[in-house]
Length: 582
Image 1 (cartoon, rainbow, N blue to C red):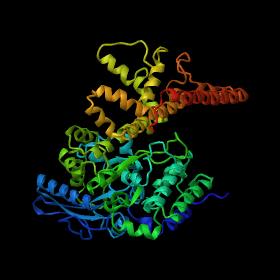
Image 2: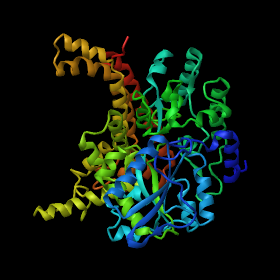
Image 3: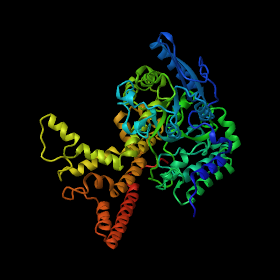
């Protein structure tokens, strides 16, 4: 079957999205401007006589973002009286169309809020300034930003975007709508079949939308869907799809067609009307829909709009246990190549990203702050709301799960614990000499691999968090009235009610334990003295080093049998220790 070109595919996506295709990607609203903001005139920025500087800045977002960003600009001018701003806020829809026009006419704003889907295009056509020199000389402190996250703003060796936040794709649900429909809230690890079933049930029982958004406003959700199959949405040359099996697309479109036909999701005309109201009036916030798909800062947006009951979920998966999320920069600040005040722009971005004053105003609305110092400050300040703290924790818990088993991080792990590694160097500083590194000692090498597995426990932590939220509060209230201590409540209520979650995580981790390969292969290659030789690594060697294909096939079937038997035994044992309410 002929592979679809990238252009053909995007045309199909545009047709599927219809009028909703360009609306409300993240923080959508009508294009109202913030109080006190003035429209920027075409042309460059200015440095007036007497040292005064005017910086033109543009961003997209909802009304609440417009208001607090204007507060930030006013605060910076208060701290730096010679710096003034001309602000042009906008909604998501139309933002990049206007930016393209401004760029073509030489009127691009000095500071531009940039999205990762567009930054490469603007960098490669020479529209964005290279900020590397300002990072090198300390004008713009990027040392507090994770190297991988900062690298997402580096195109062709040039630092053209400073990430403001990190974020994860998320599903958001309204507990009251699910309760009205008589549906139990889903937990992380739910499947697309679960999602479809719940949406249809909500529609049938309440008349409300099961899903109140659109799957066609951008390619993020489709990208997630495709990644479940172990392939990429686009090929490396960015000119065609990254897979040949067009059934992947067929299943995706069929899912949403079924929901739209049933009235469980808005059709393009309905979504166009919804989108014009902005994210603050999203159906999941107003109680007119059960689910919404956005980023993990959406619950914070909902809280700012007056609904602090929204809950976050990892998106559904094709089959339980799959992982397809990726760690994404929330957005960037870029500086126009045509700007005449690049240094002042760099100073402002540095203040925006790193300062306590700025983060006191932002409060994580754009996502989990990219700067580690800003994150530490906000977490320690006690100023975060429950939803904001939950957003921070979910990202911090889940990051190791996304990158922990990758080849790149395995190499880093090797550099830390290897011979002449970071740990050995630190021990030498304190006068502790070791003949072998932890990876070079057969008695300790396996523990380093195990430690990496523990570090990847983030996805399980999210499942535990979800399980804890399902425990009815009235049980604790009743126990407190009866005089039960905290330990008694934990042992008699929390542990029994959490056993289904423990059981789920236990099964998943046992299966993952049998499948360990990358860490052992990259870090130690099974050594020293086969102390880290895992079953899958041994199978790999037999098949692709010794070419004993028949023997390796038998090993693979034995592994399947062992995993199946272990899983069966645990399912049998659950009767004795797993408690299901009711």
